[in-house]
Amino acid sequence: MPLSIAVVRERGLGESRVALVPETAKKFAALGATLRMEQSAGIESHLLDSVYPEVTMVNGITEAYGTAGLILRVAPPSAAEIAAMPEGAVLIGLLKPFEDKARLAALNARKITAFALELLPRISRAQSMDALSSQGSCGGYQCGLIAAARCTKFFPMLTTAAGTIRPARVLVIGAGVAGLQAIATCKRLGAMVEAYDVRAASREQIESLGAKFVDTGVSADGVGGYARELTAEEKAMQAEKLTKAVALADVVITTAAIPGKKAPVIITVDMIKRMKYGAIIVDMAAESGGNCALTQPGEHVIANDVNIHGPLNLPSRMPTHASELYAKNLYNFLSPWIKDGELVFDWSDEVVAGTLLCKDGLTAHSVVKQVMEAA
Image (cartoon, rainbow, N blue to C red; front, side, top):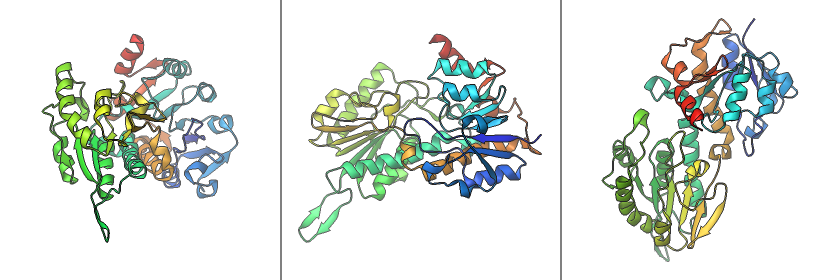
């Protein structure tokens, strides 16, 4: 029996992406899989049902999941959606593995084999599957646009008949994929850009984009390309150096995050008090608590005459390309394991084993298991 792949409309608040696009649907079909999709699942990504000729369109979650062997998702499923999944099915998506103990228990109760793309090993072979990077790039781009739209100044320098207008000053904190995209976007718009990251390797990356690196004397390279948590002494040194850079900026964009943990607070209340009247903070880390002490997730607040934005789910603001990139990540992860229309994993493979969240009714990922047991 050929592999049956199912996709339903994402029902999370503000979620407009879809896990399957026409290009990847065609590729899955060429591998021998059959595809079912809930009607209008791609409509918010501006993808009509008619652009999926290889897919059978069905009505509702129950009919879509039916006897599906593989379920593709963007966001984690609800309890009702998990209950509709066939027992033993394979699920893959951005499942937020550290957030919900009850959801993990529900997946295990139905013996779902679940892969959480947040757990994907940070190795060269897995780059084409890295959904955090592809979606982070969308988010960083959006942060640059939000900052430019909200700023009370031109981003570029302008020479006019009335005189020369100096460019806006932007400070980007965090130079991962999202931060680098924010830097590049602000540079394209003409702003003067400075940037900071605790990882030593980031200096060269920041300067390659034409931005100035803010050197605080703190280096905190961690495992797998992520930054480790700073010590109290390092945090104090970082804050002292960053305070000056923050005070000079018209716009501050923060993108620092630690997987599975609350975002580090980098912009303190004292820093905000020293900022320019009318300055802007765009906090991309709002979903995990925020890099700014006064960020309110999903809200725009004003404190000490500084505008603080805490946008959520930034990739969903550009769902067409965000969905395209994400769907390609899924295909690149799954396609090596689809043989003659059947899904056959090598459980010893580094990418498969590292991304596996649960299997056979048990939590398979040791770090997630440890965190959840502690919770």
